[in-house]
Image (cartoon, rainbow, N blue to C red; front, side, top):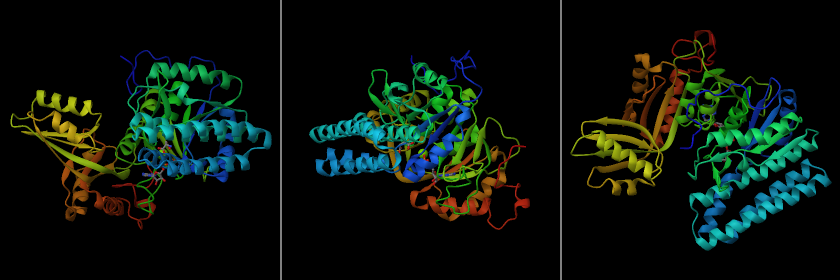
Length: 489
Ligand code: ADP
Ligand code: ASP
Ligand code: MG
């Protein structure tokens, strides 16, 4: 059986297989950190500041490009090829304009050749989609990956132009995954070997490797992706393969905050978090980190930093194995577009029913979020209702499957939060008028979560943030129920 990255392996040598200096930093730049010429110039400055630490650069597609590619794919599959081609044309023009601003004439023509050839392949894929009239997950992976192919070539050339010796590395030739299109999982041994083989000679000769995040391929070379927001995960995969000394996620906020700052303008930066807390937060919907990012870092015990590319001098958030002290409530988040599924069986809930339920969800690639059982009923949460009719059909005769969608799971995260009963009572008093439908008791001590109508998610987070992170309270009084800065002791 192939080995996946989340699995614990035995007898792993701590040292990388190739010789290297003491430091190695993997730096991931998200879409807004490469969105225009000013952002790419900031990226160059940040990479320069790490040249002594063997940087490896992982970049997302330029902001909004992945969504535009998806729109173009849907348009083509619906027969609107003209619209699809116009959309990708505007993506092409945006990259050309940036190339024009960032690189000189001779480098421009080489880059232009590369970009044109990629765009021709993209246009040809859109023609195929129009002919087949469908955009399945396999074609979608191929389509969406173009964004990172373009951005990584552009950023590599911009770095070279600025005097940084950079080399482009095709992530699809290095990160090997299973064929679960839309959200593939890395096959660790092959990935590790290929990353080391491709990157070690570059690092040894003082070059800065630049890879597109998010993209990978199966062992047969079929393009896959790691799921939306997956460039964070790519950085962690590269970091773990190279036994990096740190992984830096450069984004558009000052670090992980007590809530999404787009929702709570008074959200504060959390200076230090444990891997476990940050993983819970990512799992429960905090977009700032892709939920799979921390597993490879945990396995190799590599600290992860969340930093603002617009304010590189900031301290950001440091995520490490253990944080002493800290606060009871670290952060509040919400996972949207959740559906609550109830599975009822007249025979009651036994291991046979649970096996059949799991097998049905697995067969239809429908990941299950939270699960609770009672006498004759299994309750669970899923992120999409797409597969539910087929799952219900599979289970007909065994159990009745019903679901309600448009829900959100609001979650408070903090070390030992569940061991403080007063937190739960304050939470449920605060949302008592909101028709809290299910109180979810996950397995960990680090979360309290509940289900509300999706339309109430923002208000729930804002109310709870107001209670646990009150604006007017002076700093010296924090540290009881919550504190703005979770510091290691
Ligand atoms: P990138 O393109 O750099 O990967 P993302 O948009 O994926 O950036 O993630 C950064 C965004 O995550 C922020 O702009 C912010 O709105 C959102 N976010 C959600 N929850 C949090 C949180 N708890 N702390 C910080 N940012 C958060
Ligand atoms: N570009 C991809 C997305 O928008 C991956 C990423 O940005 O991390 O989902
Ligand atoms: Mg992201």
